[in-house]
Image (cartoon, rainbow, N blue to C red; front, side):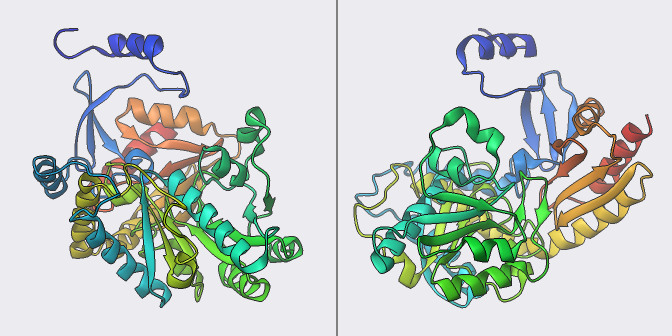
Length: 403
């Protein structure tokens, strides 16, 4: 195929040669810069979804792009049988962030995605539980409406039966309770439970933040029952909620294990699982591995992302931008409420609204958002989004809702 393929050509190629696991919207994005995207027809969009909270610094950030290009010309990959010059430095940076947030130093395992980071957390929790409580201590409790990934194990931990039903039987040892219900959690925490796995904000579950005091209460229960507290920060971590980590909104939480991914590479695939030192020591050489995890290219991108995040103080920026966005959106008559934290927000429309149709109409008008529930839109723009871009996005949404 000569030249740049048209949208119709891309759709045909996809239909013929790619497994049809996505209900794609007929738009092909070919270029990005900051908070803006351009499609194959040259149309410009404001990206307020950020690849599902991934492009934390915006598209084609010049420092990240330069670091990736430099590393690509230096060393792309070596096996984890050997050291590389970048991975330990990234491990130190993440450990320092989590040590500051939890008061406890730890260690990091690198993977390629959030699901893989959660796989690591589950394996580590089981290894730790069985080492300290016997062979029956391998159960993991999570919450209904949660989302932890689409591998068989992380799907078993995900509290959404509609995503599970076609892949039975799933791995055993996973149970769900109602989110934010401490009594239900306490009743389910028997001696078989090695860990509780929760999101600080249920992202795919509709952007549902943990209520005040809930995560602190879970921490107390885990201490009483000698279970690990694992916090899934794949969508919320690294500044997105207005703090470095979403669990920091919950008071004195101090998780034992924290998983991260989306924002860390600004689009380059990388995931990480941090655990406090005593828990991390449950793993021995050979217990877990990843061919590509922490390879030089991904680690160099992530180091540069953290450099920019710290220099720009993205938690502060996300908190301020989220406040402005919330206030502006609530002024639209067709919006009933806004929930979330920082720049991970759900815009709740009227009870009879069709969020999917609204998201498609926004796309037609040059604004990228998605329907996170039948009546709510999710927004997760770059953490460097400007006030002017927020005003432009709100104006598009207001026009769409007025129609």
